[in-house]
Image (cartoon, rainbow, N blue to C red; front, side):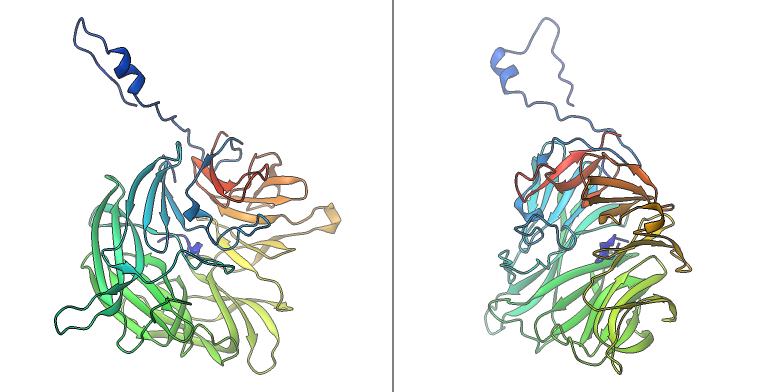
Length: 437
């Protein structure tokens, strides 16, 4: 299942990277011109699982990585539209997916949907809704998949229509594997401009990809079988937000603009689309995956108006943990893919047990004169972030500093590379930095 989303996603939604030998016939040697034309060898990167130190010399990545994800002030907002495999980055944009070698920055492939995209790459001043491709194994092949909003033209007496097209790339060959297209629910026109339109891959469970489609007044969710390449089920008027424990978590009867509409946190079974449970009367709902079995809920009580942050059991909807909130801070929870969930806001970081929701530790801690870092990523037992003292790496299980001079603060990391802003602050683009320890 992809990281959310989650990365996480989210956060998704929930976070691995990996010469040519020229021979000559006896008595022969390459000419000077042949030697000069030979490409420079791509450096081999070592793997560290997890890494705690990175080179400070980076490789510039395409603008699609940072567009709408980095503010003018040099802050990364939301999750990067990238998934890593080996030393390769798969990058989603509104109208294409790029495949890039993170060691050299060299583009390996660019694929686009077979119909015109109805979403603009120009995100203006708003955070880009573009999310990372999904990475999943289907019929023995590892695929990177991205959904696109497209406009299928009419022909003859048949009218054109708006649709979702999934593009799949074989990550072994780095070649396009296939595309699959399905129409949006009839009567839910997206409009010519595509304003407010977002088509989001929430994640993949087994071979089923869950995709949400939202506009300013429309929300739908689709479950698509990547092996059979067919739509399994679809639900209109459902604002899908994240996946956990075999369920799609969101709000029924909600649209993208329903900030003050009465909502219930609702779970739909990923395989069938049937409702698994519903809980709470709220408004302003935000949901993200906190662990394979927990979902994080930020909302306001519909009756009292009080803001809160809760952890719910994603299988039953039962409340596991509750914190009060002033409604101004955005808290995100990220599972480290092993045994710890890290929740962070603008001034607080705490680690919780990903099954019980019990708090393991929390920062800041006045008793030990320690401040809370700004968390940039969490992966394989480590927390990456920054403080006024610079980048830092913490142990997710204990909260102790593991390295206070890691070089960069990754927004996305794996065993070979960190994707991060230039620590020298020379520009607002994302670079790839090799893991060196």
